[in-house]
Image (cartoon, rainbow, N blue to C red; front, side):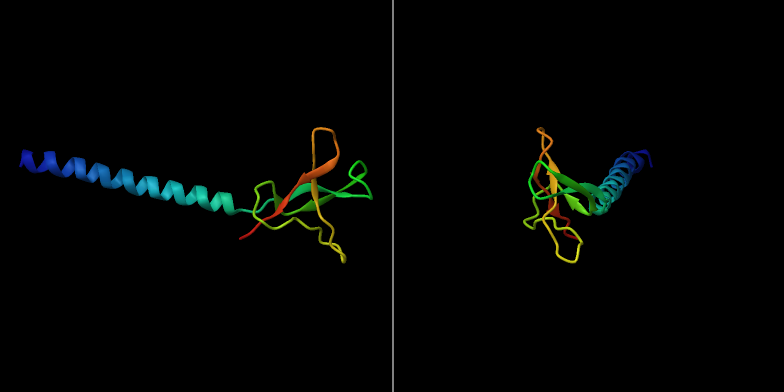
Length: 94
């Protein structure tokens, strides 16, 4: 009986730990996919004169440029260290 417990308990503990790790990873992936509105900037008309807009964009390069939701979409930028709106933002892909 003690031998069986010595074998089963570690296997049970390992199984529970594996299940907990998988469920934690799934939660992190779901959180990463959540969308968040951020403040982006439209060049008006130059990179040193910026208008702020709320957009669903990211700094992670997804291959698609972030665009405003105006009737004529314009590229949305992030301000750089020099306070000019010239750093790329990208569209969030679901």
